[in-house]
Length: 370
Image 1 (cartoon, rainbow, N blue to C red):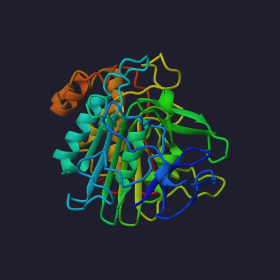
Image 2 (spheres, rainbow, N blue to C red):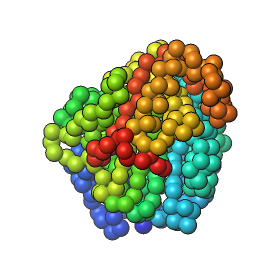
Image 3 (tube, rainbow, N blue to C red):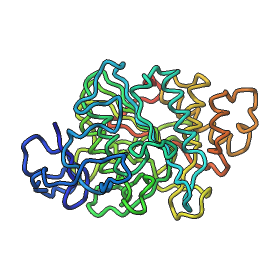
Image 4 (cartoon, rainbow, N blue to C red):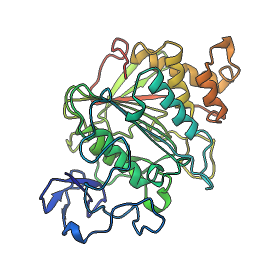
């Protein structure tokens, strides 16, 4: 069994091999020495009397899994070898509240189970509406769920990570970012526990991905263009042409996979924001990304990654002008109508969907598949 510990310097969660007394962080290179795990804090509990706090280090990975379909250790592969993590964060009762993120999560789960045949038992969903405290989108629960998603992954597996919520940026000081900023995702408790940085997401989900496995990420948050830190970014110009940009760090650190295929759709570029939420500077989100992604598939535009991107760009632009909201031509499906009812689309969508990958490819010939 593996033990999870926080890096003593950058606080990234690390997987300690059995019997090891220290570990070097792949991100900041700091060495963390491990004390006797028997002296650590108690494992998380759903009991209100538990003294466990999200920032503490769990004593052992043998603690029961928070997810009833994922027992301790490697998850079983008898469930279709498809797994998904869906996170919708609405930040209820705060100044940063969003209206449509939980509906985004519901719609994504509906699409995965009904159109792409993901077993419902292989989908973990974190939202504030879940009464189980271990299924709320806290930083600790999100970290654990990300590890659950990749754990035991092998050739032939298809993984999906969907996030709808706030995204932000923070200054990068090691020179690995082209624009000088790390991209981040904001858990529901980010004000006290901090954000999840792209370096950690890359180290957790991307770099361990084995050859023959596939990971898709759909990130509906601002500043999300390279939030998986994938090495290559595909920009679409107004004529529908694409150009792959090389975002590999100047340090030479490898940000790709271990042979697997990782592709991310994101709602906007790293430097883009929306005016929908003014309460939180440079941290805002819109459901336009989830809406356009589902709409492209529902309309039969999901044959290739290029057709997906073109359809998504068209949907967002038409939504901005109001034509999509009217259901022009009767093309707005019941699934998308459900999404609209949740208030995810509220105007001001002047963003362009982004595509990043571990390796460049021809977006107009490569078939899209989850």
